[in-house]
Image 1 (cartoon, rainbow, N blue to C red):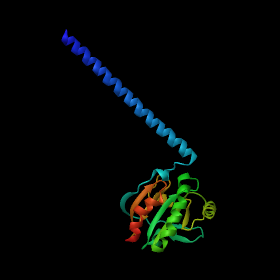
Image 2 (tube, rainbow, N blue to C red; image 1 turned 120 degrees about the vertical axis):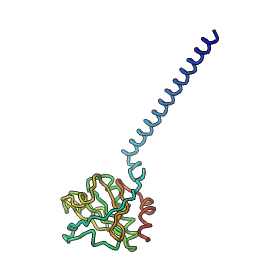
Image 3 (cartoon, rainbow, N blue to C red; image 1 turned 60 degrees about the vertical axis):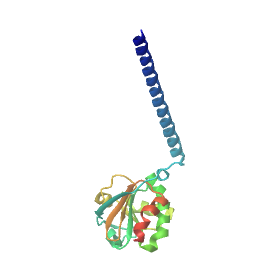
Image 4 (cartoon, rainbow, N blue to C red; image 1 turned 45 degrees about the vertical axis):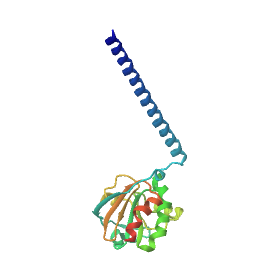
Length: 197
């Protein structure tokens, strides 16, 4: 009789633990769902952005491809023209929301550091030069912006997503890359030490 009672008690205890686990799983699922809805609503409103979530650069080490194009003044230009400087090559497009979102940040960072041998080179992916020039003018960009209607730069750097950025050191080696809009704090944390070397 006591053995039967023990087995019944063990079954009740096991069933109770299973119910607790199910409730816990449901609770966690509801929290995650609510967080996802919160992010979705605020992303749509513009209060949560890719930049505010935070992109972290990845350390890499390879020789920068020598991309040669024509700038908005119809002048031949090349990434090699900036050897001896720290270059942030930003692959972007006029139609890309996170690209547009990070432009003021990149412009402000460039303004703060260009006298230290730093340059942003924003290479627009695929649009005609006239459209790129209109964008540069309307957004007041002060760093070099090059149109790339034939995708030369993104092909050379094997870029699949926009915006993607690469930081090239003074010797022409790519040391950092990231995809997505970046914050000023992250630029200061990761790129400024390379400029100060």
